[in-house]
Image 1 (tube, each protein chain N blue to C red):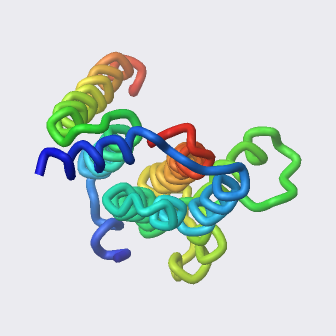
Image 2: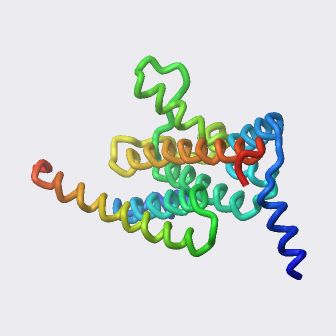
Amino acid sequence: MEETMTDETSKKEEPSGNVMMGAVAAFAGWIVPGLGHLLMRRWSKAAVYFLCVGGLACAGLAMRGGVFAAGAEDLFDRLGFFADLGTGIFYFLAHVIQTAGPDVAHATGDYGTRMFAAAGMINLLTVLEAYEIGRGRRI
Amino acid sequence: MNSLFGGLTHFQAQMFFALTVSVTFAFLSKRGAIERVKYIAWAFLAFLLVAVGIGWLMYPFSR
């Protein structure tokens, strides 16, 4: 029993990976939140990241938050676009999920805009972690 | 889903935001289960306290 635990521990403490694995994990994690961790067999993290990022993004859309479009001239809108793009598939399916369209004239819609952008930023953090795991720099 | 999240009060929406962000940050930065639970509780409360605090600070400018 002790030997098994020692072996498992030593395996966990010796991460292995390469740049390609990191890039694949990062891309997968960006497209579908948590998918990068799923590929790296981090089951619990994959589930938590998908639920949290997906929940936040869907909540933002359900609150009729705005989604920033590409090609905006305003710097703030451009930053918003990159933040929104971080949600991956939720950005591309935003018009499907948000059937009623955005309504930022009300505070709830404005909160939704921020929630969706926050989901994108958080997903970018998880993407970085997925890359680090795939690269072998993080357990 | 629209009826679930569309009817949230501002405070409920803020609580949902605080919870999801706290949980994600806990899994990003902590490894043990107990460490994560402690972090979630701490970060969640900090989010709420700061939001309420900022709300009170902004109150005089609301009218």
